[in-house]
Amino acid sequence: MFRGTLGQRERLIAKLAILAGMRPGEIFAVTWGRLTATHADIMQRIYRRKLDTPKTDNSTRHAALSEGRLADIEAWRTVAVSPKDDSWVFPSERMTPLSNDNCWRRSMLPKLELVGLAWRNFSGDAADARDADAPVEGRSETSRRSTSPHG
Image 1: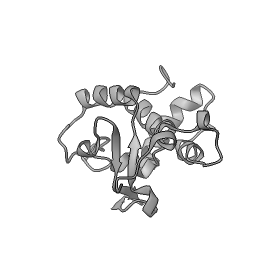
Image 2: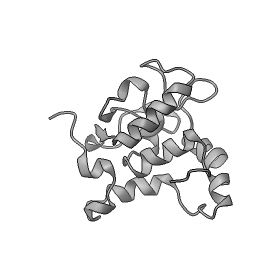
Image 3: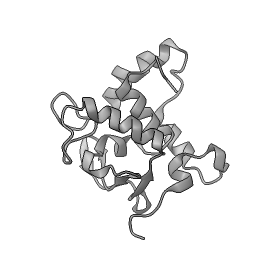
Image 4: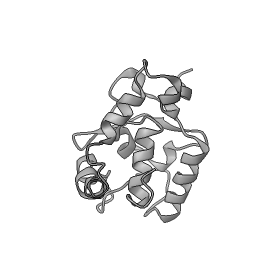
């Protein structure tokens, strides 16, 4: 998916949104310490450039990560500016969380426009994937296998 169109960072961001069902604010708020061998521990989000709690009580969860996503994450970790547990997985140049809007407008949209995919956005994809009415084969990895961190 998106191979040759998006760079490594942008491909991973898109996969976390589309395949793991993570919201953009959750993706940009994840630190290396919140990634495990099976899931991303969603305990915070970036909202209007500020660190915040997840959107709803049910948004605090474990987002399941397939072997393919884990391989993508490990490949990204090898080139990460700082792979320490408390470091952002997707930092800005100033080592703050990367801005969803800046990432989309500067890094993703121009490349997707070149291949006729500018009509997509990863915000809607994650929401669509979490839709309870979607057939199982159309749901994200998270929708099929996510578990509550509380039980």
